[in-house]
Structure formats: C-alpha cells, structure tokens
Length: 352
Image 1: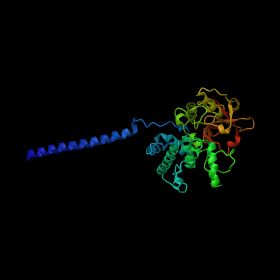
Image 2: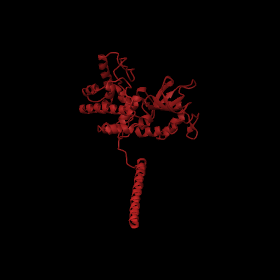
Image 3: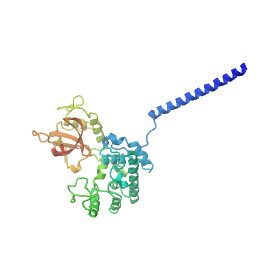
C-alpha cells in the first residue's frame, strides 16, 4: 500500500507540475500578447498623405474607424477625403452625429446619437455617391460636391463636361432653387452671385479640399492643400509655428528664446523654407505680392490695421477654414477671422 501511495503521490505531483506549467505558460502568452498590442511594428495600411496639420484632434481620433468602415466598400484610400469632410461638417468640434448623417436617413438633424453609427451612415452615403460618380466618369471634386448637393449634381456635371467648378455648382444651385425658391440658405461667398439664396453650398468641395493633400500634386486625381507655397513648404511652416502654440506674445521677439511678436513669427517661419521676408508687418505687406480674398490659400499672409499709427500693424498666417495662426496679445495660436479681426483686415499677401 505504501508503494502504491508513493506512486500515486508522484503521479499527482507530476500532474500538478504540468498544470502549474500550463497556467504559467498561459499567463506568459497573455502578457506577451498585451505587450505586442502596444509595441507592434506592423506598418499601417498605406493611404495618401492628408493635411493633418489642419485637422483637429477630435477629427483625427476617428481616423481608424473611418478607414475600417471605408474598407468594407474597398475605398480605404479615400480616408483622407472622409476626414476632410468630417472636419468641414463639424468645424473640428464634433457632435454625436459626427457626419451630420441623420438627414441622409430622412431624420431631423442630430437624430443619430452614436458616433460609430454616424460613421456607418456617412460612409455608406459617400460610397453610394462615389459609385454613382465613378459610373458617370466625373472627377472626384464632383463626387465631393455631390456629398453636399446630392446625386443630381453628378448627372448635371456629367452633362456639362464631367469636371466640377464652382460656377457649375452655382448653376445647379440656381436650378434647384427655382424649384424651391427661398428654401435653402446659400453657402460660400455670394458677392458675385446674383441670387440671395441657393441650394446647398457651392463652395463645399473647395472647403473640403483645403484639408486634403496627397503625393504628386493634383495629377491622377490626387488632391493638394492648395497652398501657393507647395505642400512640403507649407507643412514645414505650419509644423514650425505649431511648436510655439501657447507661447506668450513678446513685442520685438524674433526667436523661440524670446518668444515672438506677430511679424517675428512669420519671418521665423518663412526662413525655415528659405524665404527671407522683412522684419515688420508693414514691410512684409509692402514686399509681398497682393492677392484677393478669393485667391487666399493656406500659407498666405493676412495683414491688419489694429492701431492708428501705421497702415499695417499686425500679420497672421492663413491656415484655411477662415482661421489664421498668429502671435497677438492673447499669445501664439489659432485665431478665428471673426467679427473682431475681419473688419481690421487691410489686405492679403503672398511670398513664393
């Protein structure tokens, strides 16, 4: 009996040893898996480069789920465009219906309360518009404008050469308005448009593309930021000034060590792309190429008169979406071209 008991004990010990070993191996596997999640070296799926320097953090947070949803339709390469649409639809400040997709379901605005469902609906609607536009052979600008104006715009452009322009969008808008006069508030700059109201926003595609960039310029359907400086140079300027966001305004400041005043910041930024511009806002205004508001692109300069002693006393870098990046009494950062700044604008300038 003693021998049998000893054998049983040895067998039990062995079984216990294997059991403990199995548990330890399982724990090790879990630990490695968890570590792998945070340290994976797998490259993300390649997509065109986009103007992330102009997208809000709130918008960029949804990049992965948007790309995953687009992949269901084989359109993951359009992720940059959908992010740009999201930025335009939301202004960078997101509601729960982040794509404002409720209306596409025939529901009142903001009826959707789940951001992930909003992505599903918004991407599905985009895929339908994209499929229709591809079948008609129109350009991608038409497809994006149709996201705002509806599929009827694709048919309209297809019958007018297949290439989008704001003028065509205006014509389509007026045609739709004649069917429903006074029902739709117009978007964009209406100064040269004879109708006080219009269907949709005829500048929608232009606004969306201000947030999008891709390698190789605009050939082959790729979209650039539209900066007159070129994509690389504009990104260099933007990323440089972004380093100093939150720094205090420093009168006479021209370096990070002292912080910057308005023209010190623009001079420093342009120097990073090899363009030496004058020191003061007035001299920068005098030396820059005059452009119209309608020609304003990211990277151009906006000049202001904020005091009586000089024609030009302030300057900022235009970054799109009716915003600039500047150093003012509130510090360095983004400024809306709102009711305070807009009346003080003297003009617009370009260095290239």
